[in-house]
Amino acid sequence: MNAPNMPTQYRLSDFDFELPPELIAQHPAAVRSQSRLLDGTGLTPIDRVFADVPQCLHPGDLLVFNDTQVVKARLYGEKASGGKVEMLVERVLADNELAGDEGSFALHAPAEANSHVVVHLKVNKKPAIGSKLLMAGYSADTPSQGFEATLLGRWPDETGGLFRFRLNRDAYDVMSHHGHVPLPPYITHADDATDETRYQTIFARHPGAVAAPTAALHFDQTVLDAMDARGIARASVTLHVGAGTFSPVKTQDLSEHVMHAERYNVPAETIQAVADCRARGGRVIAVGTTSIRTLESWALTGQVNGDTSIFITPGFEFKVVDALITNFHLPKSTLMMLISALAGHGHVMDLYQHAIAQRYRFFSYGDAMLLQRQASREPSQAM
Image (tube, rainbow, N blue to C red):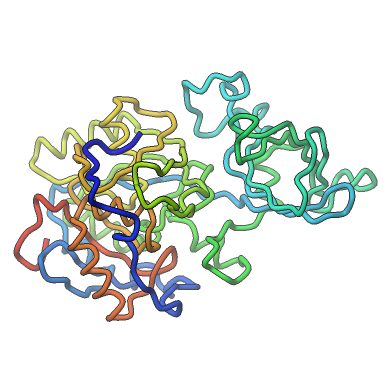
């Protein structure tokens, strides 16, 4: 699902920038809402604190959050031969997926379906189909410890890059008891108790993500209360963020890039909230690029749930979203292309140079920025 009218003049190199490595945030801010906020809604950037974000919005606006919950998807074990194995659960398969029917969607499959998982596998030599992996201390002598994983094949077909396993225990139970927080590859410390809390939004409800919707990490109850007091409405969608969000774009020609697929759902009450917002003249403000991808997938296809591989690049015609709260993204990433499509390529690149010069913190645990759709950007300095 590529963006319509994608211009050919943009190349991968157009979304590159030099980032000093010390600006990659390794830990979250001490207080969620005390992260910095770069207000890029006007022609001139304004440096703020995230706690100020309610004052940057208008009464009657609608904030749309992604309420996915990060699961402890990174699991460790070994092959029967003793070789070490690292498994990252990409998704737990639902009943319809086990039957080969991909036409429907389940946020959290019934317990009997939760034994089948699709994973990224890190191992020296890929095991043969039928091989059993001994995970988290499992063995025939200690069957009550850990779990066993049997390789069934590749996913989504025999040439796919992911692997499908059957577990001898419920996958969500396994991840809860034995899993590790799936921190991004640019965060170098091992996960700890702080990450279990801070690499999760305060309103996460539906388990299934292996990466956090990071823009929403800045929201605490104080900010939400201030939003309510200002008359700013809230709604939620669900997109289970996959590990593919960190996959680099490798082709200079953007039209050759193949996007990863992620599961999404747009509830009926959110559809109504968008309609109500439009009726009162408010703006739809996505909290994070995952919320944009969900809303625009729904608008483009008419499907309220399913898998989306939407690839938003400059030239995309937004049908729902007017503004965006987002973190700072990796160079040459699909997310740089998305925010450039929304706010304008030149404007975004200028904002990034400002952020680097002002020593903003980047990526998942970093600071935030506020952007507005370029057709509606205000010449004034505040939104």
